Amino acid sequence: MNRPNKLWIVVLLFTVLAGSGASARGQEVVPETMGVSSERLRRIDSAIEGYVDRGEFAGVVTLMLRGGEVVHLNSVGFADREAGVPMTTDAIFRIASMSKAVTTVAAMMLIEEGRLGLQDPVSRFISEFSETTVAVSDEGGLAQVPAIRPIRIIDLLTHTAGISYGYGVTEQLYRDAGVIGWYFSDKDESIGESVAKLGDLPFAAQPGERFVYGFATDILGRVVEIVSGMTLDDFFQERIFGPLGLDDTHFYLPPEDADRLVVAYAPNPGGPVVRAPEGAAGQGHFVDGPRTSFSGGAGLVSTAMDYGRFLQMLLNGGELDGVRLLSPKSVELMTTNHVGDLYAGGSMGFGFGFEIIEDVGTAHDYGSPGSYGWGSAYYPRYWVDPEESTVFLFLTQLIPWGNADLRLKFRSLFYQAIIGPVPNDAH
Image: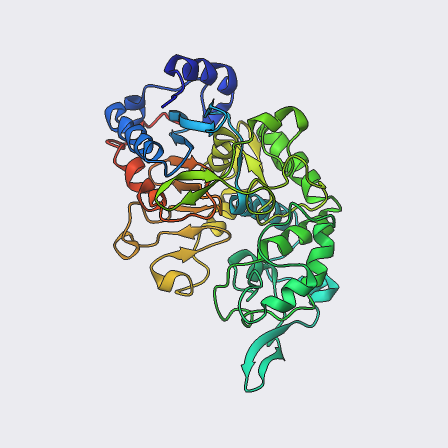
């Protein structure tokens, strides 16, 4: 198997990460200085190499930040297996629902500025949501009843607005309206036009009744556009990506970076993964799409270090390299359980865009109380642990997921490498 040269990775760290501040101090530090075992970090590489050798993934990038320093950054396998292109640590990945955290930050920035409120009804900004309905079963088939109350901004943030991705008993209605599923990058219409259509469709549950994962963050992104007077693309670039130095995070790739986009693969029962089909929920339209629809729920592409820096900003309480996007109290609010036991039967909590561990024994997985994370339809996953001052993630491209179980093991692989506390003088 073709694996990147370790010396090349060190050179990359010096050139790409130099001066990047609190999320990376210019080079990969000796892990032991941050309470992490070098020997145990190699277990991550070994495990990932096993997945790639077995053909469960074509290639993977893994990253661990502790105390604001890079203690682990590695690439394994191929960005394009058929062409023999090795995976590199600056490869660009489709991150789908990992986009939701960015949209949440954008909304919280507007809330901090007094331009948006958690209790504001969505209809204040999008008139089509003035009178929403809910689908219910009826003897004659499908019926619609009025929503018991208005949908609020906090309902969108916590996925308790009752808004799904349109599947189930309402699927045909959503298909007929042209808004079904999480993928928007092929649409030759604005996200505003798509969201307006949603307001006329019946939702899956009453506001506040259940945790329903769906279009909520896309609607929130449209609210950000209306309140700010900017497209979501421009808001992200001017208010988040630019200030944080996230040069490789986009809705649609600049042509000069198209060759850095990793090939998406699909499971192949009985054999190694195969190239996913072209088009939606496969290779996608992030290079040659209409570049019109900016999906706050699932539209971004990014790199390990870009997204790691974004997560480090959250871990720092809303600040990175002297740039403050949010106050510590806003980040605390975002990473607090707001849904009681509506999410995962109460074994985990859910805040504003993140699942959250409240009790390790109930969650039955590695972590600390207050740690949080989420993932992507293309299989990547991230985790932030404030108690351990740690960020870690892995990026790959597998859609649909098939039987791969790395998502179930990734926290144990990273946590087992932590052997001591972070030094008091670490950032």
